[in-house]
Image 1 (cartoon, one colour):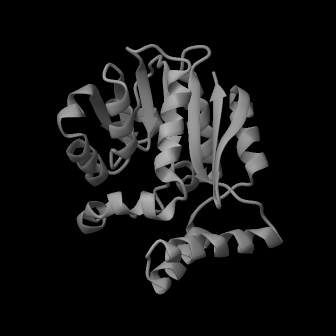
Image 2 (cartoon, one colour):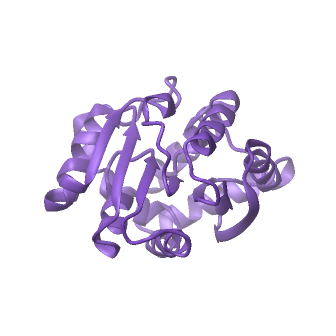
Length: 226
């Protein structure tokens, strides 16, 4: 996560984090299930999985419940979010080793698979390139890497898609003023690429057979293979 943007250090905000993704991301639960299935296509039942942006623990818990022998290394820059991940995992926490920091603070692996969900849009362009490349370096040949984040066309279409994001979160029960503030933060603080740029970055890092598996309004998800 970009050091310029730190929405996850306030303990009160962190305590409410789990409410956000299912409410703000269309098809969030289904996206997690699809991610789990895409990993399971290629890995064994005793796989070691790298989870980038693991704070909060929502995907860690989903993966761990679905596959009782998978083990995880999770990395996240926020100490508060990693504490929440520990609480979210509960008795499953023994199967996850959590590391505070960025991709360079993750073990070198090699891992059987990796994920980065709802995280890359917090990084600058250069940080994003480096993160994707360093994930690739930590994977076994043929290992799947699943990403999902904000990814929308630019130009005139950008405003339309951001308006659709705002409408979705309001329809999910968010106060319209808070939804408008969220849109403003997305516009000014996040690095959002086009879907074509996102796919190209994965390929440039070395991933092959990159394909779209998820699209929910302003969010897209891809799988590629090391």
